Image (tube, rainbow, N blue to C red; front, side):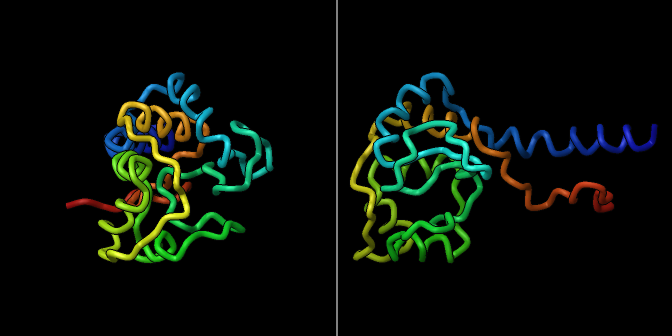
Amino acid sequence: MKLKLTAAVLALVAAPAFAQDAPTGDVAAGEKVFAKCQTCHVIANEAGETLAGKNSKTGPNLYGLPGRAAGTYPEFKYGESIVALGASGFTWNEADFVAYVADPAKFLKEKTGDKAAKSKMSFKLPKEEDAKNVYAFIASLSPAPAAADAPAEGEAAPATE
């Protein structure tokens, strides 16, 4: 009983943090818009199963994008600017994804402070609603991002005063 109560309390405490980062877009609409993205991107899980897209390797796999450091998907050759952004500790969230796909080069210039920053992604998805929907679709097929302050499975929550 004590274990179930602790798990329930942890779930309630963690819920607001996850809800705050929950995508605001429409998953079904995002699946339709993703048809534009699949020319370059795929969403394939750790087992290599294609969940969406046509297994293209022009762009990185988008599985697990929410909460992932920019420019860090293994075995993909990113441009220098996005790698530098990820090295700074930047991780993807909905707002930044929406801004990035609207104008990738402009986003990298603003985020890195480097006026010469470039993006290998030339495609733009300028409609905010479309971008939010695509992000929701990607998130729906990805594992939930790890919460930075959440205890590991089986560990007790930190004591609060």
